[in-house]
Image (cartoon, helix red, strand yellow):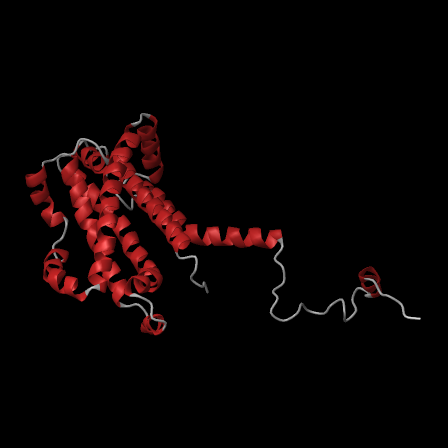
Amino acid sequence: MSTTVTPADARTRIRPGSAAATQPPPPGRAPARTPLRRSLGALRAALTRTAAIAVLLALWETAPRVGLADRVFLPPFSEVAAAWWELLADGQLLDDARASLVRSLSGFGLAVALAVPLGLLIGWYKPVADLLGPLLEVFRNTAALALLPVFVLLLGIGETSKISIVLYACTWPVLLNTISAVRTVDPTLLKLARSVDLPPWRLFTKVILPASVPAVFTGIRLAGGVAVLVLVAAEMVGAKAGLGFLITNSQYNFAIPQMYAGILTVSALGVAFNQFLVALERRFTSWRATA
C-alpha cells in the first residue's frame, strides 16, 4: 500500500544540521536580504554620499575659527546658516528664489520645446542640416554671457532679456545632443527596421526617437545646470529681485554671510533640479536594461 507524504511530513523529517537542512539555495537564486541588511546597506550608501560634503562643511566651520582663513571674508558655516534662516524667515529668500525659478524655468522650458524638435529635424534630414549647419556653428561658439549686453540693449533690463538669455544658453546643449543622438543611432536597428519595410515616419517614431531619448536627456540635464548659472549672472545686471541680485546686493553692502547664503541656495536649487531631471529620465528610459 502506497503512502502519501505531505509537505508538512517532509519538513518534519529534515533534522537541523543535516545535509538537507544546510543545502545552499538553488543556483541563480540569491539569498533573501533581511530588512536589517537592507537598512544597513541604505545607511552605508547614505553615509558614503554625504561624507565628502560633511568634511567640507567641517573644514568651512573650523578654518575661520582657527585662523586659517579671514573670518570677515569667509565666516563660519554656522553664521552662514543663521543668515540663511533669517533670510528665509523674513521672506526675502523665498521672493528672490521664486523670481529666479520663474525666469530660469521659463527660459529652460522654451529652450527644450524649441531645441528638441529642431535637433531631430536637423539630425534626420540632411538638407536641413546643410542649410542650418553654418549658422549653428557661428552661434554655438558665442558665449551666452558675451551676448548679455546685446540682449539688454535690444530687450531692456526687464524679464524679457533675462528669459531670453537663459533660452539662448540652454538651447545649445539640448540641440547639439539631440542632433548627435539621431546621427548615432545603432545602424543595426535601422537595417532591421528597413528590412521589414517600415515607412519613414514609422521608422522615425519607432526606432529613431526611442533610441535618441537617453542622449537627449543628457543635453536636457546639461541645460538645467546652465539655466541656473546663466540666470544668476544675468540677474547681477539691472535686476531688482532674484538670487543673483541677492548675492550682488549683499556683496555691495558687505553682508558676507547673506552673500554665502544666496550662493548656497543657488547650489541647492541646481542639485534639486538635476535630481528631478534624473528621475524624469529614468521614467522615460525605463525600457533600458540596467546593469
